[in-house]
View 1: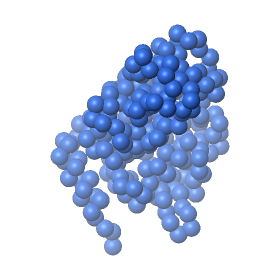
View 2 (view 1 turned 120 degrees about the vertical axis):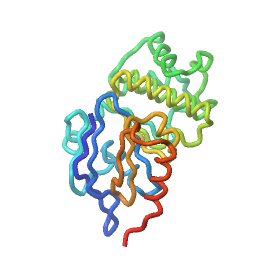
View 3 (view 1 turned 135 degrees about the vertical axis):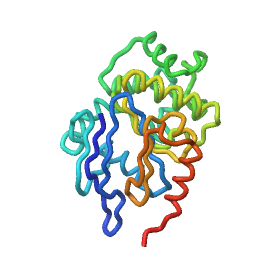
View 4 (view 1 turned 180 degrees about the vertical axis):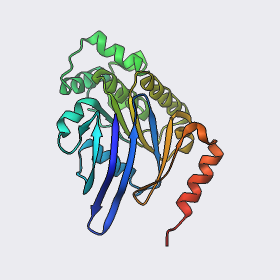
Length: 236
């Protein structure tokens, strides 16, 4: 569902992404680990069509992101670190609005069913999202993905700032989406959560993919040791 082939992005003398190659298949959760500036967010932004690559290519469901960016958005849902919702609207109203943008129309009961599936408590459905915690807002984001029937989910530090309970609940929601066949690419600093939810883990540094493993190939301690070794290694 996601295919990245020798993707490079430069800004003058700065190489933000250096010949990146990776793929995320249907029903796979791929977690990208790396420090700030490693190239994780640049990768997400390229897939979203927010920026254009210097060279290389990227595909969503076999559709070229650069050549047909509007078409790829039909298959995408995106949850950033701080999800932007309309604060004066309720969860149901926000979901109705964003579903409409995706040319999806649902009645009140259907909208509430998506919010229930995303794990939002019923008592919050008709409250202004300005009163929501970050975890509650992220659940609305998942509901939007469900309503859109997104085939690809892009996440940029979605668990940053969540308490352990909310982070665990978010991980459980990702597993539900995985069971629906959604391909997920998540940029994160959270090694523990990556080990808990991912099927595949990649480590980025200086715009390059340094390591990639199936999650079953290494323990959390081995992941931590390899990550720290990679982050501390300085090329000559």
